Image 1: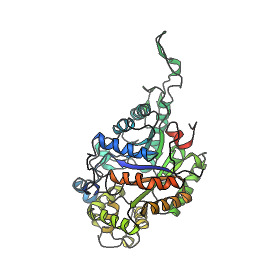
Image 2: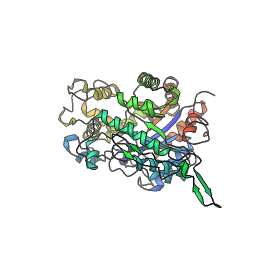
Image 3: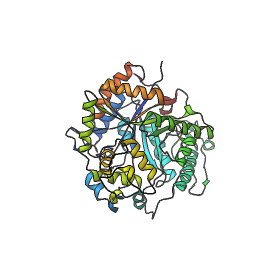
Length: 440
């Protein structure tokens, strides 16, 4: 059997997870409300029907307020806002599926390790071992303000804190030995005290006594997901991650990123095959390439340039409102975020103006974008997979949940016919589904 690609989709508990104007599309949320169980049950059933590995829930606590120093644009246009608690969706979706796994974003900057370790242990139990933790280290000042902080830690300190955070969580998840629970009805012994341990952690950032209040769960610990691309983020991924989410606009960019990750893995004493990389991918369907590109243009027409620039400003941490809207980005001289702007130029082209970049960025079209009918989409995915492995994180496109339905009904069968995507799930918990039976 040829290598099999992995597929996930990224979404958020919000009216516009990626494309700012998705809620404006006349077909969006027909028969559904994005904040009600029926919508999430439908998405989960659809993705399981398509044999997807995972539904990945992006999340944050911030409100984008960098553009013009105000949150007005974020509130006006719904820029990844409002956003409800995503963790409560997972029990809902797990009850209508048996194999689909779930990735949940949780922040090491604003949650105590004990709380998070308990949350993920509980979810691992409720899903029968189908939960992954997307580890993020908060960088937004508006997030910090929501938690009573005057400022954020610098980049290096955030990862230093995240490193200790992982240490505490792993100690807590291991505080129950696998056979600690006895549940002997005759003697009345529920658990063996000698097999449940305090951790007594005292570190730079955290103190925690333990043990965890949840016994050992099906996976033991959640599958670890991470998306950091900085030097510190890559080194952190090399030590901890099992699924790495990366955004690159070309196959050459994917290969370069993978080579850098593999070098970091080797330095950390891990093998390349210990980490699956999922590449951000936007697939826009049509009757042919021309009609798919017309669909993209219609998506961009629903995005006000200032809305996209407000979102971009929030992600960059730099107020773009003072820059000329009609000037090519490559001719704009600013300091501090040049590298990030260069990646935008690489994605969108050197002649793209700030206004056009805002429209495109507001559509959530980062990473590789492919266009065409189902066969053409499958051709491009198969070619990229052959060069870069391991699979793709699909970004939702112009309307929900219909664009997910379209991909599952039209593109997945094409991939399955070619033998590059599964027709049934592997047994086991999330880690075993990804890496094979017995994976720990």
